[in-house]
Structures are given as structure tokens and as C-alpha cells.
Length: 152
Image (cartoon, rainbow, N blue to C red; front, side, top):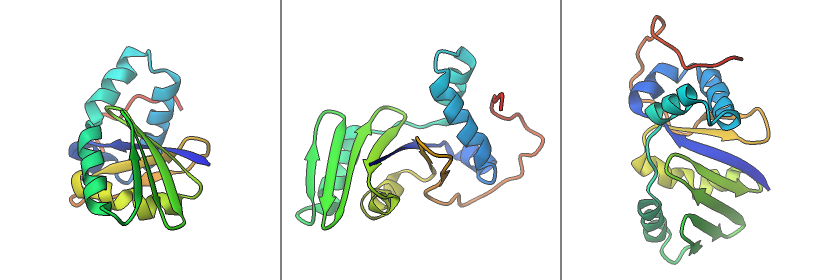
């Protein structure tokens, strides 16, 4: 199974970094490698929004009703429908999920998340794959503004 992480990005930062996803990718990788670094930790808190386990769990159960098997724990959810399976671990600022193929998440998870999170960034925790799940509606030019801290 592959492991991925999803972050809900605040709209002002999503607009600024929509076409610069490589910067976000490097930032999140660096955050996980140096989460004790105060500057990086503060920036992480500033650009990401919270995920609500309860809200996500309720949406999943409501939308899938009897169409899928949904098992939930304290901060985890498993969804199985037909040949698709995904397991989620939800923390305040990140959803980590495991699935065989990203197509499982595209079928089971992404449509639900897009209902209440407008700008979602996903990255593969094992490979150099990353990108936006949902499109940013309004883009602005932020070429002369500060960028996230990154040593890469």
C-alpha cells in the first residue's frame, strides 16, 4: 500500500502557490524532517487549515450511507466500496491515507473532501509525487512577495 498526506491550504496561500507546487512540496517534506524548527513550524501552522475528524466522519457516513463499508475509530476511518479501499488517519492539520492505488482515493475520498475544503494539496510520502486535489478558483500574481522557507 502507498501512503499519502493531504493538507488543507488556506486560500491566500493556495492562490499564491498554485503554480508553484514544487515549493509547497519541498516545504512539507522539510517540515516533516525538521518539525522542531520553530520558523518552519510557525509557517506550517500559518498556511494550513484544520481538519475535523467528526465532520469528515459524518460526511463520509452520510454520503456513503449503505453504499460502502465505513469503519471509524478515534482519528481513523476505513472505507471499502466494491474493489476500492482506503484507510485514513486524521490529525488536526493533515490527513494521512493508505491505499493500493491513488485511484482508490480519487473514487472514495477526494470528492468528499472537496465538499468542505476548497484547496487541498496531496503528496506521496514515498515518491516525488505531489499536486492539488481541488482547483483554486481565483489566482493572483504574488511574484514579489515572501516565499516559504526552504533550503532546497
